[in-house]
Structure formats: structure tokens, C-alpha cells
Image 1 (cartoon, one colour):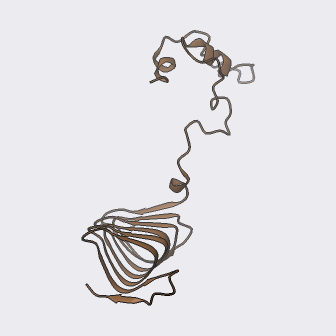
Image 2 (cartoon, rainbow, N blue to C red):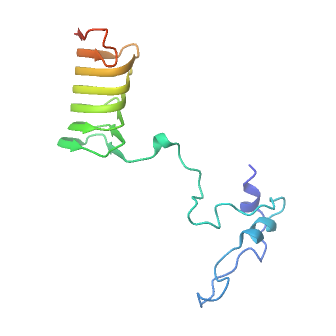
Image 3 (cartoon, one colour):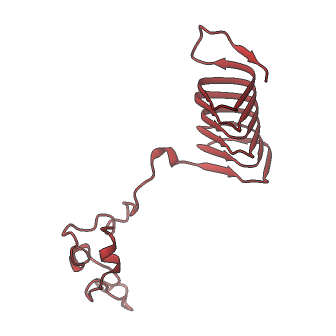
Length: 182
């Protein structure tokens, strides 16, 4: 890897300035980006981009899908009688009985959700029972079981996945609602 040479190579003495007892002294505990970039053999002559600016994150940012608020209800956890708001992603590994309006819900294989939810994207490996409105895409995996009053924009059901109840494709007004029993 190209980044290993400056980290594991021989350190030059002028790269690290030890802290001085007087914090107001110039250069106390700081490393200039030009000396750090030129001290390592084979290093680029460009200044280090993130080391000198505290407002710029040092690590690359995650894609926008992963940013935002995330609530995970772990295995063997029961969350009952709540209203979940301002949550971008809900991950259910235990049992949740709630009402929610969110962007993404992910129900793990041993997870279960009972109640009502309005979601942009739903990925179901476990069980959902109640009223589910998926504005964009509903994905039911082989171990997933969805029952109740279901409305969706698009649906993908993996072989073995179950969908039961009053089901309606929203956005397709020409088709009537269908009832399915499994």
C-alpha cells in the first residue's frame, strides 16, 4: 500500500516537535504539513490535505445512505408501545411493537415488528405484522414473512418469502387491491 511508507519508515527528527511546557510558544506540539510531506522517502511534495484543517474529516465520508440517525434493537430486546420518530434507519433484531415513519427498516431473520410503519425502503428477513406502507421498495427475503395491510411502490419477493393480507401496489391506480392468504 502506498500509505505504509510514511507510517512505518524511519522517522526524521524534524517531523515531531515535542510539546513545550509553555503552550503559547510558537510551534509547540504542531507538525507542519510541508515538513511531514517531505520527510518520508518517496512521499509526495503536496501538503497533507486533512491534517492541517480541523474542519475537514481525516477519513473519507460514508455514502449518504449510511449517514443519519440509526436505531438498532438488538437480539432478545423487546421494545413495546412506542412511537419512533426522526430515525433514518431502524434495524430490528429483537421485537418491536411500535408506530413509525422512517426512511429504512431492516428486520433481521430473528427480528419481528408489530404495528404500523411508513417507510421508504423495507428489507424483511424476519416478520412484519400490521400496517406497512412502503413508498419506494419492499424486499422480502426467503426467511421473511409480511402480513397485514400492505401498500408498496415496488416489491421483490425472494423464493420462500411470504406475503399475506390486504396488499395494494400504490402508484398503480389502474390495478385493484388484491387480497392474498398464505
